[in-house]
Image (cartoon, rainbow, N blue to C red; front, side):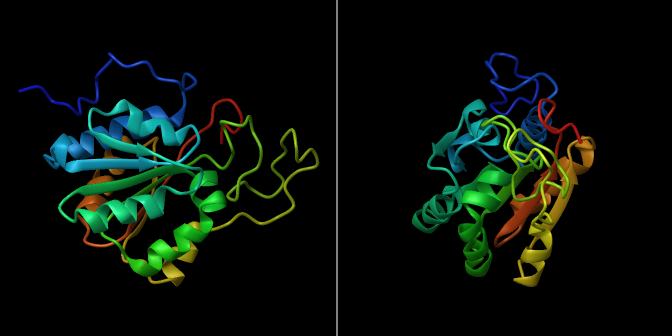
Length: 206
C-alpha cells in the first residue's frame, strides 16, 4: 500500500529556502498523520498566505488556500459542514496572529474541533523580513531599522487566558516531540493550538 503521507517523498518541488524550519514541520505533520492512520480523503488542510501557508500544497489530500489571515474561519466552516473530516488550519505567526488575530481569538471562544498549527519564526518571511506580532523587542528589520519597540504578542498566554482547551508549543529542532504534540492535538476534541518555533534562515535565524 502506498503511503500518501510519506515523510521522505522527494517527488515534490518545494519553494522554501534550504534549511527553512518549514521542512521539519512538513515532515513532522506527515509523520503524525501517518501514525494516526488518517486517510487522505478524510483530511482537509486550510491555509492563508505566507511561506508556512504553502504547506498544504505538499500533501496528496484535500486543501483550501484562502486569503491572508482567513484560514481559521474557513476551517471552522468546513468542520461545521462535515464534522467527520479531520481539519487542520496552517499558517505563520504573521498570518495567524497578525492579519488573522481576530479570528484566532474567536476560534478559541467557539472551540471548534480542529487543529491550528502556527509556524512561528517571529518574522514575515514571504515579504522579506518585516517584523511580525511575535518579533522580539529590539529585533531590527529593513523597515524597523532601529529595532522593534513593542513587546511581542504572546499567543499561548492569550489562548490560556481565553480557556483554550488545548495549548502546546514545540520546537522543530526536536522532531520526535513535535510529532507527539501534533498527534495529541489532532486527536483532541475541540480547538487545539500548536505553536511551533522554527528558524527563518534568511531573515531570523533565532
